[in-house]
Image 1 (tube, rainbow, N blue to C red):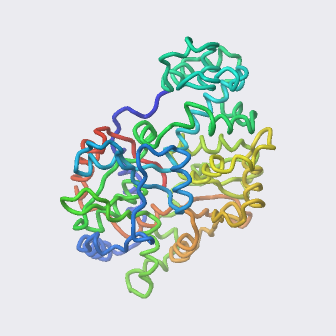
Image 2: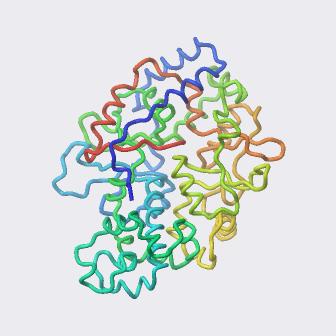
Image 3: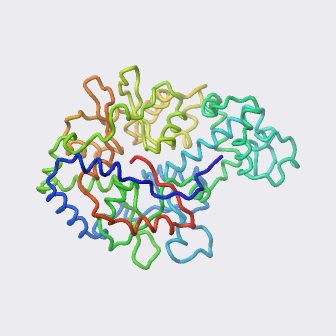
Length: 452
């Protein structure tokens, strides 16, 4: 299976940003003054992460343990440390990149295909006892029956076999997500307890499934650079390092920036912009026909695949021809499938609505309010300030724009909110884009993440 290892650069973000800028009904003098002001504010002035210490995950940590760390600290991403003792002393040698839920979803979806093949092909556990590194899933998927048959095989070889059409040869439906969901508890047991899945490390995830370039900036950089990277250039987080030192001192996120903007209430420039209705700021950016949704009776893995395919961080869940909003699912919710598979063991096929109802009734204190309560919404004529208040007060990256019948007519993301306050001087971020394409940790180029 193709694993996003090809060279990839920052995609062109000009169309989005230019559209937002052209639709904003703001005086040019105000925009230029704000941009100049943000360019003078050093990154060192931005508040540190709430704990005062950036959570880092060693590269040899298992994927499941990494998910636990992200969940326990209520964070969506963390820098990954190079576990090699002889690693270079600079940041490129110290860090492998960033692990986030986007990369984890790519890994889960690929292994969903492999696990469904193995389980549908026969008794995976019985076939794989003592079979070495490939394990039960690999043995069953390849049709092997003895130790000699799996000698020298690797997880990559198993993945290649599946990608090469082994699914069809085994008589399994090509829709592997449906097959995996249909297998219920057995699928999650395989994913968590069998090789090669349980020994997969964060390092292999970062090197194979990265969506975001690892582009640290220094403490003496300007906040304008950060705001542009988090809006126009679609990064979800920006690591901050000291000049001439490889240690990450801060980790600035889209959420942190929007909360910072919220603290600017009472300042003339903020009060003026935040009082404007969304339409005066070119929002929502997407038309009603462009809003990506999932239905409540879709399978939950299909919902995660939808996010992966469209490079977005969440989707509204709708019902009926009018697309009435009934909930939402985000990439962060994959943690529940990995950390609490017992919650879903009774479902023969796990739909989106079953997933949401189960979490809402079983984990009322999970902190994932979008699954316990209706997702945040606003009307098309809502002010930007109200949107900022709603987003900043909840653990969410987006708010859904609905009409009087709760039909989803648009989405406003953290990226959109930040874009309202800035514009980019010509060529301003060129130096950072160049370093992202040729100087990433691990020597690999990677693919930028999707919607905020």
